[in-house]
Length: 475
Image (tube, rainbow, N blue to C red; front, side):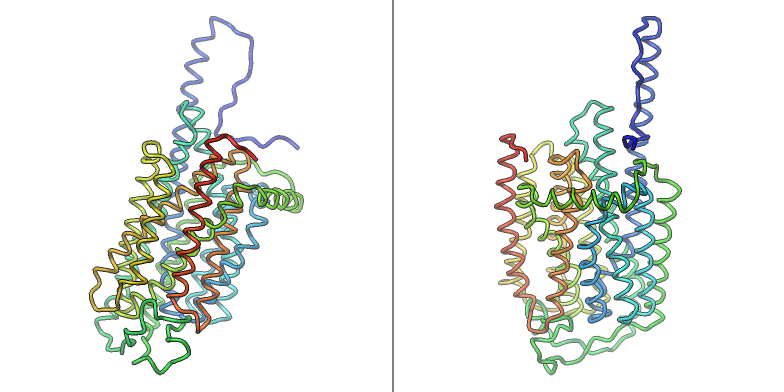
């Protein structure tokens, strides 16, 4: 089997030295290198825009599931992240068989399947749709991380720059666009749902049971359904259908961008079965690597903190007190914060170092967890939710950019398996959070204590990883 090649990396043949051709060859090589470097930057932009369209639909749908479909919707989210755990095991194999570009294209199409299922949000549509999306999610993110890191390393080699710096810059650009999907997706939701709110006279929940006192997927306090002054009704079917049409169009646009504009990066190799066996071995072998083991708590926390904000924060802190029509506005602010900090952190890392950025992200989330547990009280004012959204967006930007960065630095030759492990345990965090959210006796206060403790434990192990990296210890 031939060695995998990268069509965007120039191959220079070794010839005997000829003084008369030296200048011509040098100029040709410089021109070729500059062209390929430009293509790498172009591909980063194309990939980023494709993810922007794809997650304009999915991110907003995830934010609204606990408010629009609080039982089947939350259950489908648990199925999504449960199936991601399985798909993480064959993600590297799929990438090696069909290549990064076509892996991304196929998986983006699967996201549109889940969007289509939301036209008829029942258990028999959302659960299978969630299964399809979950099986595609890990290959999608593993292919994205591999594509981005490989492009960054090649670009750094052409430009004679430090790979770690370029990886951070490319991750910053990508996650700026990716987190902007929170802005676009929630802007659409706000524009579609807000007119409905002005015409609605539905009763609101008893706000004393909002926030950390909200329990289970329904939001009832414990098993007491009588503690509600009334259920929040869903928007009219026509309104929801219009919203789904816009999101489905976004998913289809993402698919077309990948198919027609994204360059191929990896040459497919071997059969799926053959590569599945080798990728399983590689993923499971890396699972016992001490660096991966010590980063698992942070992997899981990065999933749980997103699950909290998309599930409990939107339902128990926004919909419960102010109405579903405000979810989009507040999550837009979260997206703006996340996008700006994702872009900025990619450039700040070379000046202040990774440890300071990780610490700042940890302190931001720990502070907000303490505020939510001991300070925040349900009320009509919305400014406090907007401030929490800004701070949570900063913390999320840290985990999304810096975890990908440190994995690219530690495992440059084993990227697929490393990113597959990251997405696997991130999915475990998502799945655990959404699964326990369906249990009526588990309230937000219990889950906040759980993720706060996990963050402290994860940060402590992260510092050990950084210490060992600086000592030059390899495994």
